[in-house]
Each structure stands twice: as C-alpha cells, then as structure tokens.
Amino acid sequence: MRGYSRRDFLRQTTVTLAMAALASRAGQAGAAAPGSPDVTAFIDASGDELVLGGRPLPWWIEEFGLPLHVSYAPDIRANLAAYKDVFERLYPKGEVRYAGKASTHPAVFRLAAEAGVGIDVASPYETRCALEAGVTPDKLDVNGNAKDDGLLNLAIDKDMLIIADSIAELDRIAELAANHDRQPRVVLRVSGFPLDNVTSPAIFTAGEWSKFGILISDIPPLLPRIGEMPVKVLGFHTHIGSQITDLGAYQLVLGKLLELGGLLQAAGHAFEAVNIGGGFPVSYVTQDEWDDILARIRDGFLAAKAGDPSKVYLWGNALGGFSMGPDGEPTKAWEGELFTARYPKETMLEAILTNDITVNDRAMKATDALAAAGSPALMIEPGRSIVSDSGITLARVAFEKKIADVHDLISLDLGVVNYCEPIVALPARHWALATGLKRSDPRPFETFIAGNLCFSGDMLSRLKVAFPRKVIRGDVLLISSTGAYNPTFFASNANSFPRPARLLLEANGDWTYLKHADTYEEIFS
Ligand SMILES: *Cc1c(COP(=O)(O)O)cnc(C)c1O
Image (cartoon, rainbow, N blue to C red):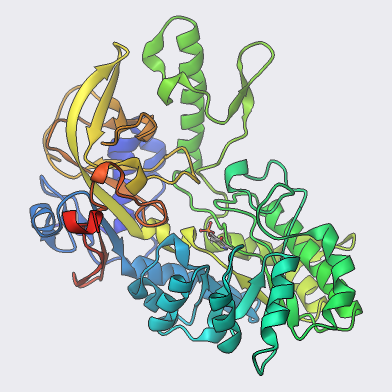
C-alpha cells in the first residue's frame, strides 16, 4: 500500500485531475518537503477507492454520512508552528492570535493553546470556547464592532486585550472600567487606509467604506483625550481583509500604524502593541494553474462571442474579475480575488519582516522600524492560513446533465452554504474523485458543479473542473483546502439539509467530532 501525505495527494490530484492540460508543469512542483509533519499516510489513493487515515472510504461514510468535512490536526499544528518559527527567528516580540472564526471548536482552539498561540475571538461564545480550551486570557484578542457589556466586562475582568472598534466603544470601555479595579488593556482598530485594488472589496475591511474601525484621520484628535481615561491604550490594530495576496498592503498599514505609535508616544504614552490582523493568503492553486484559469476564462468568453460556446470556462460565460474594455473585450488585468499567492501563509509574515516599510517618509527594514518604535509587540491574527489546507470535504454526486446544449453539470449532495465562502467567491480548489479511481474513460470530462439547494446561486464550482473520466451518480468527490470558513462560518440548514459532520483527525487515525450531522430534531429545535 502506498502512503500519501495529504499534500502529496493534492499534488497528485493536480496532475491527474484538476488541470490535465498542465500536467507536466504542475508535476514539477515536487513532493512534500521531507520532514514536514504530515508524512503519515492520511490519504491513500493507490486503490480503487480512497483510504483516509488508514480506513477505507465506506467506513467513513457508514460512520458519519455524507457530506463530510475532515480536518487533519497535524497540518494545523504545522501551520501554527510555522508562524511561531518566523517570529522566533525574526522578531521575538511577535505574537500569534489564531482568528477563531475560521474554524471554531474547543478541540481546534486546544491545538493553538498547546502551540502557545492565542486566539482572536469576537463573540461571547468564541471567548468561552477559547477559555474552555485552555487559552489563557492574556492571549485573547477580543474583536468585533458590536460587543455587548457582558463581553466587555468579562474582557476587563480577565484582562484580555480589547480591540476597540469605535470611539463610542472606547468611551463605553472607560465607563465600565469604573466598576473594575484594573485598567482595561485596549488597542484601537483603525481603518480608512488608501488601499484600493489590494483585494476584492467584499473582503477589504480597512478602507473608508468599512463597518470596522476608527478612521485613521480621527486618531490624532482622539489622543489628547485618552490620557484622562481609566484605560491603557497600548497601540493600534487593523485587519485588511482576507486572502490578502499583496505584500504592499501589509507594508503600508504597518508603516501607518507605527506612525500612529509615534503620535501615541508623543502624547506621553507607551507604545506597546501593534496588531496587523489576519488575511495571510493561501495558495489554492499554483501560479501556472492560475494563469491557465485566467486564460481559459478570457478565451472561453471570446470564443462564445465568436459563436463557439463550447469553450466557456466560467459559469454563465461571466468575466469574473476581468472588466470589459471599451472594445467589448475583456481587459488584460484581473481585478478580482487571487487564488494563488506569491507569499502564502507564514511566508507573507517573513516577507513583511524582512523587507522595507515606510514610516514618516523614511524607508527601512520592518524589524528596524519596529525597533525604532520602541519594540512593541507585533500581533497577527491569521485564520484561513492556519486551517484552510488542513481540511477536505467529501460529497456524493447525485446527477449529471447537459446545460445550454454543450456543457456538463453535476449536482452534489452538498449545498453552497456548507461548502463555499461568500468572502472568497470563485472556488478554485482542487477536486478529485474518491471512488472508481481505477475506472478509465478515453475522453476527458470537464464539468460545472452545482449544490443541492433550491436557489440558483448554489454553485460549488463556477469554474469547469476536469476529471479523468465521466463522473456519474454515486461517485464520491473530494474537495481540498476546505478547512477554513466553509464548514462553520457560513454553514446553515438551508432547505432543511443537516449541516454535515465535521471531524478533527489525528495522524494515528484517532478522530474527534467537531460537529455531528444535524438531526431532524436539531434542525427544528
Ligand atoms: C476574520 C478576521 C481575521 C482572520 O482573517 P483570515 O483571512 O482568516 O486570516 C483576523 N482578524 C480579524 C479582526 C478578523 O475579523
């Protein structure tokens, strides 16, 4: 039996399934790094059906039903450790706070606690979940733009770091502080950065039109007032958005937050913390694959205009992130979200720390700029990049049909609410067969993929996905990199389908329920 690590497997599926046209190039991506922690066999694709964690696919289906979400704990540990390692090497005053909303459960939060990583929480129950998982209050960031007094009082009581989202919230914290015998520790969330075009507007949370934060221009007039408040303002926070592939966006906000730190010091306060939020990107596909996707979107669009609809690659012959030029042709530049990242995960942090940023018109290495600012704690809140690539989802094919005469469409027993992320709108993940792996078909099969809900936006892949054979009713498919947001943040019981079971799997095959599939009674509780 041949053992695959999950990453090996994804590369394997890249080669054979997702992007057949790119087989040779993707194949050169190479095997998983030796010594990476996921070398234990998690997914074995050597037989006719997948073997997951040493157990055959039918065992999992019998035990948990379909659809099914599985997160592989060693991958989460490896991602947590990788961020910690960058800080230890480059800026020991760095602190990692896992953004708990990306995958929320005491068992997941425990992995963070064990790694010495804190949690960014944004609700009373996320906070309770973190505390019950053993995360100490000093390692919690309390975020959110609508905190109630209960959460603020708890945060003050236990000395958690409060991210104040507005001046009104800061004033409320000061009022509540009167009933406590300690000064609340606060950082001010800032927005209004000139960051057009760094990421798609839906996931850009630090501009002028953001529901989050205090406008950066409102900070200087606020500073003289904070000396009179019974509150310790330690510094500043921002969160640019999710899947931020642009290093320049981080460099810009870090520079600006350090400038604000200088103003805080000039007003007579210590500058102890700067928090640049999360958003560290995941590379869902390689650059070559991404270039191919963009070329196929454009070519398919143009071919359809010229009378050949068979090459359409994006659902509805849409243009995705291309805009239409004056000539009616798609522009060359893609303005939408990027699903490939030059600096994925912790390499973005490394790139931030080792390159120049600009502070008060002076360019200097970020670590030097931090030192010059008095070496505040540098906090980050990665969510997606900690858990995304730890997760897979299994779902069954219900039916296959033709649409618009020429395109194939398969429907799965999984709805978009339990899979997709509205915040990253163009799923470009790897899809693979989990059953009938030995069956062959001389003709390649490319298809759009729909979910099971009664609304037309329920598309699981609006990009055509290539499989090595025709996909038929009863086949089980595997979707990779579904560990962030998909199974939790947007999960619902739309159409009264149960939310699927979620599992956390260990290298030795042990698993923990993160959630069992809803029962009828639970849906209607
Ligand atoms: C969602 C969120 C994060 C995490 O974002 P990712 O893209 O998952 O890394 C971090 N900080 C705040 C305040 C958030 O709302």
